[in-house]
Image (cartoon, rainbow, N blue to C red):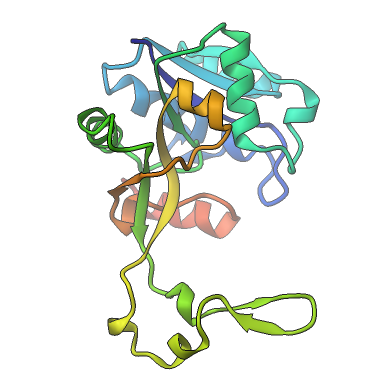
Length: 223
């Protein structure tokens, strides 16, 4: 079975220009993602998908395979799953294990990756995917959603008045790790395939770089 790590790193970013090339503790986000995959000593291929030549050059420094994606897969509206499927088509990959790693999760470790992979491998027939998650402070049952006319409860309105401790336990996917069978990704064309397995990561390793404030906090954290 092929074991493929894929890192999606488009060049454009509205929040932070050249975001995937930004440094955390002296190493670029794309470099940290590649290194975390290499440290697993597990993958047959580590592939970076990008539309940016500078990102491609940075990824090549870490000996990753490069797939240059077309412009239509590099817009801010392009879906990650479509970029991933483009990688598989470009490399003639149709089966095996896919582990997608976002470069904006700089503190994800090889131990995190392999824990998620092992969870998936031990439950191949029982799980459609494994994704990394973190604890969520705000409960979604306490939220309202705009329907075009007014705000309405996401769930039953009665839950808005329930103590949080009496509500169902919830977690939030942190974007660091997505483990799937490649055949399932091609068939369903989405990452979240039920039953969904979750690998819980602590808050300090779940940071997702989206703003300059996130980047500053990551460099102060110093993991």
